[in-house]
Image (cartoon, rainbow, N blue to C red; front, side):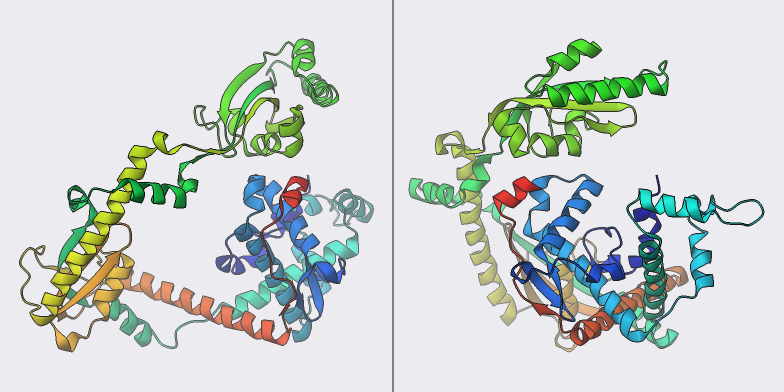
Length: 489
């Protein structure tokens, strides 16, 4: 099949670095029209709205493409990523329009020849079958004008992104100076005040345990679960394609038309009805990942309202070439919160850790105060080690930043880092020494990374300029999808 999504991936190769989801099908210049209902406008770009309907449609396409669950696609984070993608594409279109970029017919023709399905339409003598070309596009729901317009948009955007993203640091000397800073080393000693070391000193009261449980009931909730029956139709290698195709049609028709039971399809095609309990929205934990019940499309279909409320067969799903699945729910177990007595030990453990963390933090604060007066008193600290941004040893990013930020002219100096949930770690920075000679390959790799970061920063600035120029205006802030919307998708 003529895969339009595959052939348009070049458009946002660089922009994808700024997004958390892959690129959707190309909207192109034609994305400026339709859905003008102001009541559903989310934001406007150059006076043209991006509507809730557009976001819902794009979210559904992306969900179908990557096979994620409905609950995820209705999350605010997923929908915000969809909106960000649409906004980026609109801004790119706005920029291209105002920069008056053009793509010649010759450049377009050369680009189209790279698409295998179109290249196949050229005859040996070099002639092109225009009728088959139009038919091919029509079968994918596009006219020649729409498709070639989107291709022109692709090429213009590619050229624009490539030119903006070519940013490099002004001189190799500057890159070398920056990489040298990454090699500067500092000698440190460390002392950890861990909550686990103070657990034996605490004994939470019944009131503290109850208060924690009531404030954190979500931690002790069981997810909704399904008990299901399912059928798997798998092609026999000895069968020809037509025979299996007929079986697949029968399988799909019977499971859909007689949706109250899998038995008619099982009897007709001599299949065994299988059962499984404890299916959640994300997986059947007791089954291998290759199980049909761990297929994202099957799980998504099973957790739709119709399947849950009416316990009807889901429509047949092709989970791989030659493999079809249908299933139905026999029992639905809604999400629930475990009673306190059932999770008492876990609640007590977590409350104890919280109380222990407070003791550890207090002890660390006392020692830190003493270190500020006498930073050379490092009794109990780990042996001294040399660290740098190139060689962080076991320091977290936050700890490394704090250690590397202290004034080298005031050493030795103490630093306190809170490790939320576990305690506090104290560091004493004792000495500083310049970077040793870097491996040329490492230095070159770091310079390339710096250039990439500079390119990303330049591109972000470029897009911000066009965002301001296009007068992006938020009309209705994006919100979590409603339950009814989720059911509809």
